[in-house]
Image 1 (cartoon, each protein chain N blue to C red):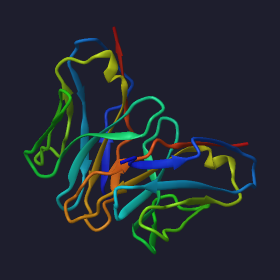
Image 2: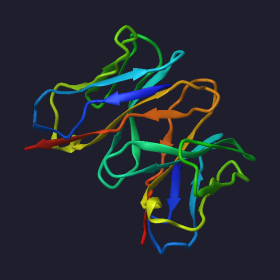
Image 3: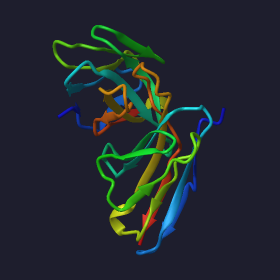
Length: 113
Length: 114
């Protein structure tokens, strides 16, 4: 079945370090891919998305490229800030009839000053 | 727009009690969803709806019920609460057009069953 696998956390970085959070997926059909972010005590917010192969989603300095050949959608940021500390979820959508999302287990990022 | 709103924010239930978690969206979205999030885990889909009068089970529907009488509201009912239902519950909505669009989430309801 369709699934999403993320790297396990927590990930702890110093401010201004480079961030990569790995995400790979298994899906039939042609999924759309998403990264959501969850700040402490809040709901999930869409961070970025890509709807077809080779698309690059970007927002707030974060980027991810939809790689069909490696079934991956890794999240990157060149220089993290303390305010980026949150839980990051990779997700995929394969059904335009229901809009259902399949989520990875989430990766906690902690950025230290 | 307020987006997706959920009430209450927190609730403590005793075993065997029942309650309804409210969810309302003002974006005229057709699709709505209920998830639960357990500590250190991802989100699991409980129920979803693709329009008023239409609901369907997700991955973990046991112990829950839903209804969708209007486009705006999608309440989740817990009957006979059990400790295993201690979790954070999120409601979400999606425009539901033919583009694979993103879901918009409410702030969550933290439920404890003791």
